[in-house]
Amino acid sequence: MSDLEDEEMTCCEYVREDGEVRHILQCFCECNDLDSLADDCIKSCCEGRRLQGPALRDKLRRVCRSAAERARLPWPGGAAPLPWPGAWAALGVAWMMRRCMELSTWLPWVACWLLLGAGHLVGIHLLCLTLPLRSEYLVAWVLLSIMGLYDDYLHLVYPHQPWLWFCLSHLLLLEVLFSFAASVFLRPKQDQDLASSGASWPCKICGHSIHGRDHHCVWINQCVGSHNHRSFVLFLVGLTLLAWAYAFMLCEEFASARGQVSLPDLWASLWSAQRIPCHAVDGHGQPLEGAIYATAGGIFTMVLLIAQVVSISTGLTNQRRGKPRIRNAIQNWITWAKA
Figure (cartoon, rainbow, N blue to C red):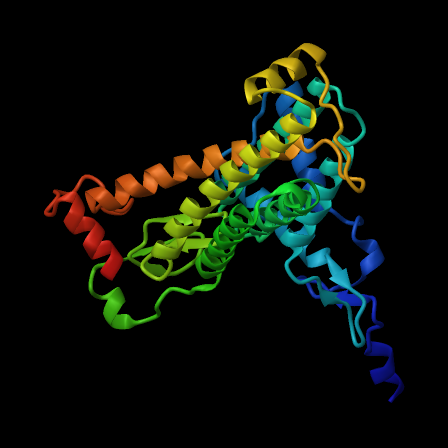
């Protein structure tokens, strides 16, 4: 009996992949992969020996797996893995960046943090594709962005918005949320007949074949295929319109509150002052940061949308590019809609 009690783990202990029992407070101990990666980076700078290719990707994957394994919560019988670690990481980074932008209204300061936010998203995008690696980070970032912009909308735009535009805005928001949920949660068909029909292609990130696969999208953390292609396109359309509509409404509201005649006059005054003035309502200030962020997001989703429109119009997914076209654009859209 005493031996069994000695083997029982406390609520803060867990068993690692190598079979060793560790405490959650040891999350920063024995980071061999991380230490090795840092050492390789230093050597590459000082001695010109670069770690690249499969060796680098394998080491980065081990670092990510180790970090996800150490993210745990106290639980009776042993520490439980933290669900969706990438989503919690996105929440922490988004909160930190927003707090940093609020420290100053100096235009270069705000621009620096906005560019840093965009740059780190591009880096994680490329990291997930090249390792390859699945993560909830970018999925959570999309949701957090929508929630943050909607919070500003409620305090800054909604009090002065006509009911017609209020209804249209919320209908568009519902379309974005439902299509995004469908893109993320709809799973590909697991049917041997579909796999043997020649219309399925393997994905090294998902780890299995996807029927009608176009590409793996890290923003929905799965492949775009016959199971979610329509909802993905609807999501891109809705988010592009919603982002630009939000940016326009917020800039127009801000310009009218400052007595500016037009939006060009507003941006000219901001550039000359090198400041983003506060328009605080119930503690919500600096709304133009959200407008700039939404405009950039709208441009990014528009580029993705154009790529999808071209792909559907030509009837060629990324797996079939270069093959002869057998239908015109209208027939391709009809086939895509019925698939």
